[in-house]
Amino acid sequence: MFDQTHNLAATAARKKDSLGCLSNQLHKDLELEAGDFTFYRKCRRQENISEVATPASDRGFLIGVSLEAGHRRRIMTGNRSTLHSFEKDSVYIRNFEDDYRADLHGAFDFVLMEFSRAFVLNTSYERNGSTISGFCAEPGHKDAIFGHLAQVLALALDQQSEASPLFIEQLGVTIGTHLIDRYGGTQAHVSKQSRRLSSLHEARAKDMLLAKTNGNVSLEEIASACNLSRSYFIRAFRETTHRTPHQWLLEQRIERAREMLRQSDASLSEIAIACGFSDQSHFTRTFSQLVGVPPGTWRRGVN
Image (cartoon, rainbow, N blue to C red; front, side, top):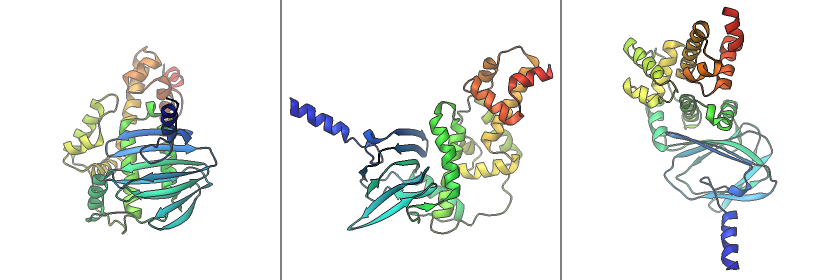
């Protein structure tokens, strides 16, 4: 009985997550799924050495961005190994078609983004008229753009209850597009011609964005209704409105909130829910950022 209990405890202690890390060693372990994307935050404060390993699969691709300096990892490929150092904004890319094994040295804090193979193939074809089978990037290479996007994603993972699904999906498309353009083997040749939505498609997209108060409509759903791919739709919407879909929707919510503040005695918490914000705190922060003053102050100024 003792041996069985001991073995179960040892197995639990060695339990690995979906990326091959020892779960019990992680100080922070966050995950968020969004269609073609899965986002992770993996943080370890211990200064020990551990192994990460995953067998080959058809999951797609993974990019990791280091949020702080000091991490090293020795990556094993066949009978050879290479040691890589990671500074803040350093990047590594994994193709899940390949076996992966590495020794992790010291503490680390990574934001990671997993992309389905279908997303990569479809987006790369749209960007440059050809498909890619992998990415070229030396582990530990610094990328300031990915570093900036990783900081935004880290905040979204820490505050998932306040993160708009539309914003998360849009962020995934942005990260995936940069991954393909920068590391897809050849630079994408994107047409410089105007990519504006037709009047019909613009009206349809705006109606769908506004129809769901909580913002749970997906970009894929809107793009399909306009007979466009998701990444093309985002670029066309931005060129047409000079706003991303998420920015445009936030501005519409704030405008609706202004009308309610002017014309009703509803409380700030009631207005927040009516306008699609998760709570009063989220509403106040967004209103202050876009308008320049908190909603209570603004209401007193117009009444």
